[in-house]
Image (cartoon, rainbow, N blue to C red; front, side, top):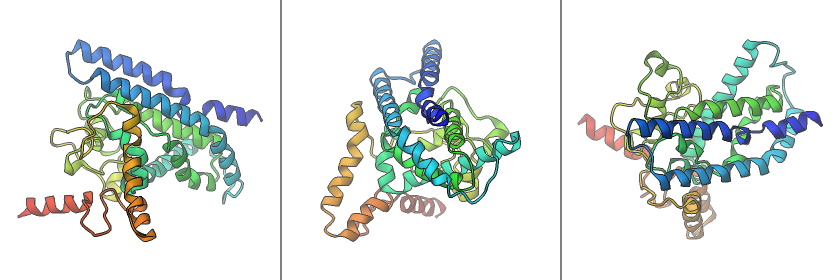
Length: 299
């Protein structure tokens, strides 16, 4: 019972909201001192509202997630004490970060996931406040991708703690105040690498999915260096600071496409194909547009 209560207290990002708000206030102050235009009041208030909504979703999901994790953990293939040494803890963290890469990639490249995640990219600003933008649905989707960690014997509480630490690491990446960090750019996720991820520039779309480490992107072909000015937001910009519209606009669009799909096959396509997919093949897939861009550049 004690472990269960500890898990509820430590679950995901709820205990980190205070840290993030302190970082936010610190960057706002720095931005004001340097007279930069990195913040807009209505945009920041929208981000804060979405962050609080996400925290509430995390709290609501906590008990179900933890109980499910313990149920899955009983089927673990290995009986390993992942807390036995610093090296074992580090190995567990690296594995959780690896799983986060695939989770993050999936919610970009599968439309159902993108409906949940697009609000994180909806701001045309880029600052610590942007890190607050998350979806209520991610509180339920992300844990599914952590199942392999449970099956190799990592304790559920440890999985949650490491995932929370992974999220905490990513908060400081949402800034324009820090430039490139030399050799760290090759291994770690950095503000420069993550600025690319938030770019609506075609060459930057669906790139740099890593949480703590950028090596996964380099290994799996999704890495892009920051070499042109980043235009923040999404390809078809969402011109609103209404947190409700920012959260639900893609869910509404997805629902309309499914309703008019005409067949189960097409409905499933709208759910599980990449964003931009269309049954007639005339959709705009990011990978196709990027291939066309590369082809025209190489002529």
